[in-house]
Length: 286
Length: 119
View 1 (spheres, helix red, strand yellow):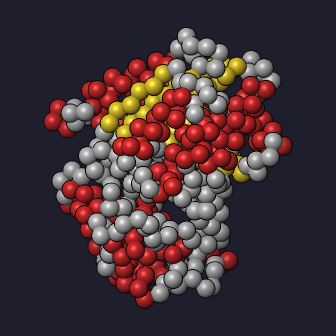
View 2 (cartoon, each protein chain N blue to C red):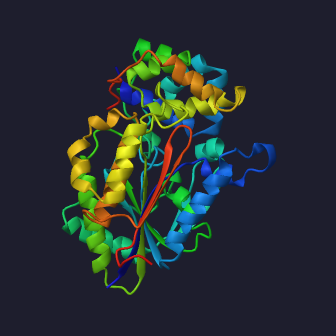
View 3 (cartoon, each protein chain N blue to C red):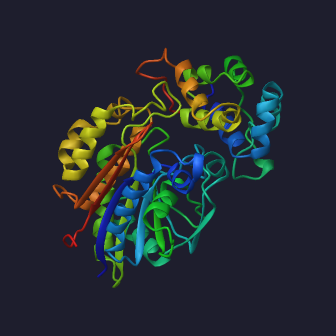
């Protein structure tokens, strides 16, 4: 059976690429420390020596739209083109091409359907910064095949938070039961408190530092039940109108398991949002 | 109220560089052209199978035609779509983050609960 060698949860700040590659007067003051933190985080994946990455993210109205919006979608393609014109325009993100792992995609689709998730699929998924940002930060050589899993955290009506946790638990079960000798890492990205297009956007910190503090504690401690006890679809509007992306962190808590403390936790308080990085090693810390 | 159509306008314009420029330079003309020729186009479907029933109401049409992102927020347009498109059109005219912060200031009179964005 396949081995789940790392579970990684992270924010996906689209400005990292531009900030980390800027030079001279264009380089922001926070860039060097940000790079240092990201490179330390990257090492937590490198040391797990994965063969394939299952990557959880969300389309930002790039390919998926309100005329046909899946709640959970698995990519099943040999390759994935990546990043879109408006991400190039606003964030300076490069166009990318990622290799797919179709066998694992097919397996997750078949077994995921049988496990009770009516998964959508795509044979021509183009992925956006929710998945390319963690490639840029965690695996910049872009040498591993991926299985993308998209969630809807964006276009109401949304699945309930518990459904994200349940999908995370199922992804773990499927990966560990996959008849393969490959080493699998599951990487997912979401948000802490975040406001986009509203009155609390682009402040000196995230819109709700108190929520961020609690959220980091929940994730770091694997405290799924406490998190589910406090977080609802309605309550997630309070810390910022884009905070429903936190449910992708809850999905990753489901992958990591109830009560499983993260082996690596780091945060970085930037303008507009707080960065957060977590790694679990299911087989024990390296 | 056709919140879906508001979002469809923002979505289809934002993903097309030529339309972003056209909407920046001629908002009223672009909205009129788009409603006449594009509003009923079913995305991912051939042109011959278009819809027949989609149209803006006057308030929506005026908000789009005047680049009034405050009104669009009030109408429940998806804030990510609105922000992204307006950054694409107007950030270039301002210093770093100036446009984004001014955008927030102009929405400062809104408090929770924000307008419903479901379509």
